[in-house]
Length: 474
Image (cartoon, rainbow, N blue to C red):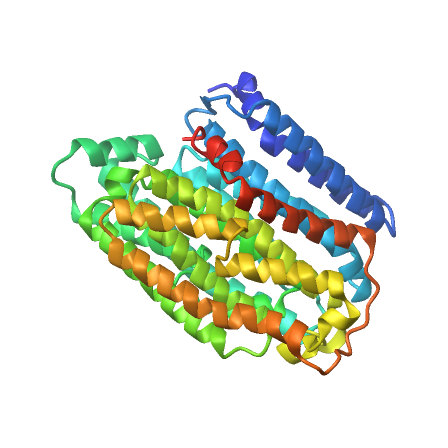
């Protein structure tokens, strides 16, 4: 069996990131104090990879012995992952310098994690999917504990690693059972097996269940959510942003890829997804109300948002999938922006991360307060921001799939979420006590959060700009 050199062009979204990451590793190994160089190398590498991916956006090809699939679907998610990584890196430099942890390997690890995410979205075989999950996960374990002198960061990494390793067993065993039932790990052939066989062995359904458990952990769905608050709180704030956006999008890309509409439409799977969605929305939103730490609040809200997106999966129709892609695109901008503002203000010993620290923030920092308010409005689902249309598309998909009760529950939970999101807005604008927050804000950090806010506004006013592209990726 010869190596298919002609297939290398299908790896363009990955090769640029891999080459950049390896260059950073070599530079860091050979020279000292090269963190700034690594920072710029990572930025250039991601931008070049994004341009090359856009150039082949609508290309379609199955390569490397039916293991890898180049498609508009995979390229769309690749751009989302690279965009999330780029915004995270831009926010990270000053944050790491502030905490004395500006090491060049940070940027290489983010690039490797992004490669793992892309593998998940472009896999044509469950083995490649598993490799992508593990590459992403191992990198995130390291990044969660990157503040090596911070006990909470170490605790976050350890909790994430132990629970992640445990869930990996479910995912791998599920893949093994699917192979045993279908005699293949090729995703297309497994789907064909499900479609053409009227009676399916019990091992097939157990395998499907275990794979779903493994990916549900990655999207932070109830009851596989217990790691999220502690990990998001303990991890560096910029990495919390990356985990809540890129990693969640990667897991959803894998679920959509390996669970076709006819499998999702099976009443057993549909019921399980509806239960997961309901539990995630209810528990995520209710527990977020009681939080005093904003990072923990955003962590619980991340669980709730996983529930909203699971409604799109439970709908088992094309509009549900389109809604999930739109929602993920908006969610990346919302969470990167919100965590980005927190990373700008955060100080040693976890200062300026509680609601009370933001009392009267609009007096000292009116611009950042306005941007944070935009992110909170969008997370709530208030027009004219993209978060509103993300929920709208998903709820409409549920109604079209005769899951009106689930859409109503989603609307009710969105109303409840308004309490803790708008609570932060009220504190910033209507509390007389002036905040003690004082920080220097540079142009790069400002640019990232401004870009995120503008994106939410543009896609909220003109959602069709994004939806027209999404409708063409399937």
